[in-house]
Image (cartoon, rainbow, N blue to C red):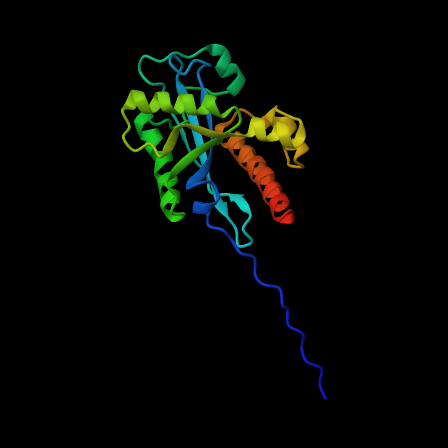
Length: 217
């Protein structure tokens, strides 16, 4: 007589689609680097965006980054102190900056594709001090009269608030450390790097909250 091979009775996890997670919105992490703090006057210089995906276990994970260096729009200003912080060299031969409308479309196109993929209605911007990024984004959209902006015009998910609640930290570097993630200060103030770290932070907090909610059901 041979022993029967035991089979697992555990059912695979039920994964809710993204369209049901955030009321039809697709979270997209965005970071901008700019020529100052006034979105009505100062130039948009870099933009990066990462749509949030779902893995096979139903956990939120960062998707692929789309990014562009941006030529300062005519009529906008640049505070030299901002360039000292970001390290942006406007005339660097490898910067390969795009005109503002072209740069927006370069980033918006994969966001719209992700919205269609997940059957969502539109994107919602996730950012650290998110309204700063959204205001610069909206100002650039208005300047260029871009007609296919995929982002909600005023709603955001702000990781400052989320990290303050979850870890008692509001500075991005400290929040990332508190979440047990890596932070390299030499790469900070790059739109791509800050977007990648913010995406990891958002997913870490959102997944922990989802697990806690499931445990209480």
